[in-house]
Length: 207
Image 1 (cartoon, one colour):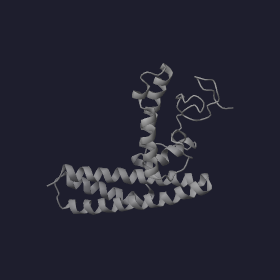
Image 2 (cartoon, helix red, strand yellow):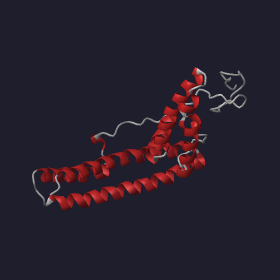
Image 3 (cartoon, helix red, strand yellow):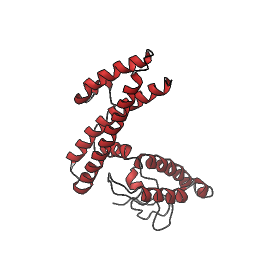
Image 4 (cartoon, helix red, strand yellow):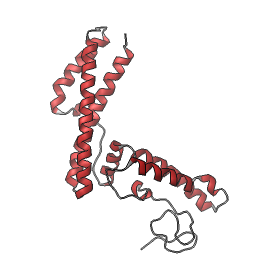
């Protein structure tokens, strides 16, 4: 049964505005529904941006300074949700994490002990090379720069694979695709952390 409009008591459905009196309604906290989108992993950035700007104008608090207190409050709430939703949905990684959470998948923090098995030996060697650089061994710098390029390439490859899994989920709704995406995200997060660590060390100890 549709929710009733707080102002005219007519069925307001799931719209942000009542179709009978146009009053602003309590905003949904579902990011996709807020933007009027189906829950999909692949989105058109230009369309999302247009929806963001259109909604920003419609719900801006300045438009509601002379409206009833309910609408003033809903405007502030909707603006906060809009900004959070846009920040999350425009980034493929945060969008995937959001969908996984909404679908009931556990998204934990990436721990240093959770290194992908195929990277364990490389991570051990990387840490040794980092220690050499910290100790003043400039000969370690080219090795770290090469590793940095490789980690970035690995991260790009994961991004490509994730977008393929995005398309699989959007086409089939298969939760198995979400499980694969979660595994890819965990691997990506680990490699992203390694990339950031090497970048910081090279920056801080630039000769």
